[in-house]
Length: 307
Image: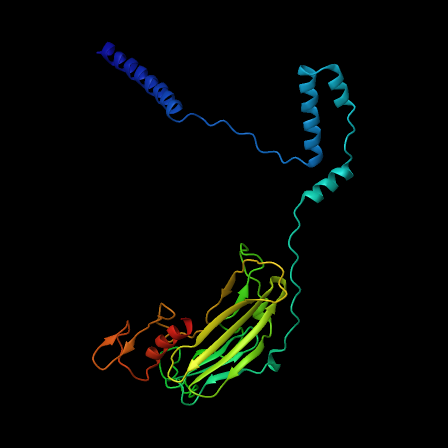
């Protein structure tokens, strides 16, 4: 019995050693170790010139004539100042930044109002950035953060609060491939070139020039008597003295400061719903009935201001 037990011990030891060596061998075969790569060395212009000169000397010593080796050995070395001048000349210079616009006193800017009595909306425009400063629905009531009627706003439902910055501002890019636009036009006071505040359709046009891009930009806001949306037309023209044709890229922002009704329970800001009501069929995404409710007005007017 002792011999049988000893044989079992020896067999267990041999099998353990085979398993250990087999596992190590399989691991190396299936997942060989990665050799560390040499890190890239960032050479200066002076170091690169010295390395190239040494390589040329070694090549001339093995394949060239003694005259070649002597010519390379006596080649005048570039001084550090000359190398720095070459490096500065080869470095691309960034485009000059545009001159900053002078500071604007917002209190001295006179706003222009579209709509009012007899219209569905009242839109206050500002020459600063040629944007919308305030938008109010005349025939709907304001709601507070709990979704209840707000008696502090009897004038109507304010969708875009009367505050800066203005909404629907247009900004251009210095180059078409730039990651961000310049805010120059958004901080500039535009010229009022057209204003019609009478009749069933009112219009106001703002214009400004970009001499650096040879461009003239015109934004025309319009509002009809029965409209629940503000019209906006953007016109781009070449200046008469523009020298060459350049690609233009611009960004048009949306509304700022849109309020939240029922802030304590809502999980979304607003849903933009577009539709119309007829006597026989109701079309659109809204499931509410027509009437002066704040939620219906908010959804309809939000679609109007963002379309």
